Amino acid sequence: MDQIAIVGASAAGLTAAETLRREGYQGRLTLVGDEAHVPYDRPPLSKQVLAGQWEPEKTHLRKDEQIADLNAEFRLGAPAAGLDLDAREVVLADDTRVGYDGLVIATGVAPRRLPFGHDLEGVHVLRTLEHATALRTELLAQPKTVVIGAGFLGAEVAATARTLGLDVTLVDPLPVPMARQLGETVGKMLEELHRANGVRVLMDTGVAEMIGSDGHVIGVRLTDGSVLDATCVLVAIGATPVTDWLAGSGLMIDNGVVCDSRCQAAPGVYAAGDVANWEHPQYGRMRLEHRMNATEQGMAVARNLLGADQEFAPIPYFWTDQYDAKVQAYGLVGEGLEYAVVAGDPGERKFAAVYGRDGVVTGGVGWNLPREIRKLRQSVVDRAPMP
Image (cartoon, rainbow, N blue to C red; front, side, top):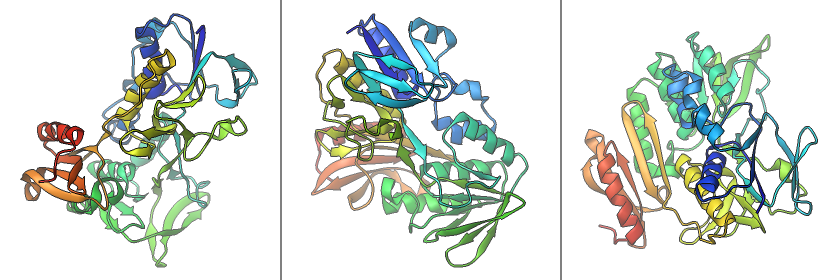
């Protein structure tokens, strides 16, 4: 294999590149990124960067000398526009082509937008450094802020905005924040945490319209007809895999790039990170938008590209930091599962719990108990009985 291309200068893409070099690959290596930045970390955007605790450069995943040591060509600010599987070439937006013997697709996701209001000033999404710095600048003016979407991103931004002293309203059509990700019990606790910190939380509430004046948002009309005053709105309603550039390529696209258990989408073509929809040997088909998965999957596809031929079967891990709470989870957690507290006291906001199905542990969650949650990981691996 003489030339490998990685589309997506992301955490997954960078990890794949580093793993290729570490495993002894010495051929040509090209990383294509649609942003002009070197690979950077996204989780701090909703917290440290937004709060002004970090300068944007601190999010960079590697120092300049580490990037140089990869001996790779970085094509930054050059979005991929197409893929020619037969010719084994990635077509860039400037009509140049990058040839490959092996290809890693790590293009991540893009934020969903509402079908209205996105052209108004003061209406934001959050995915990139530019998004974070623009939102940060707006928050400095102490605006009345409405966050639409009470998933991880929306809840983290609401927490950061409240920490900055802003008037914040969190709106979501679901009955409990983050219930899909963490289940109703933990989701309800997070809702109570936000209320205790002064956030107005409106669940079971949809958004019907953005109200603008002179091109700037001034309010949000809800589905019950009421209006929230707002001069800053964050739309955090999820994300969609960046696969538009693969249209007509011949790859199967369905909620991401469809891959087998080895993350292979076609001969010599692999996907990693948020864009990869792969067959987990234990959990079935899944696509994870978690930082840890991006790193682990980037390593796995690099090794498989070099001939390892191993299934990718991680124990999913994710976390969220809101106010003084650090919530961590392993495995399958969320709605419709059995639930049992195994350590600590939820009333003291310091506990660990397991989730299960048919009497078998499928996942664990910890709230300010990092040591206990690490222990629970083994229960997930062992498929231990529910307590």
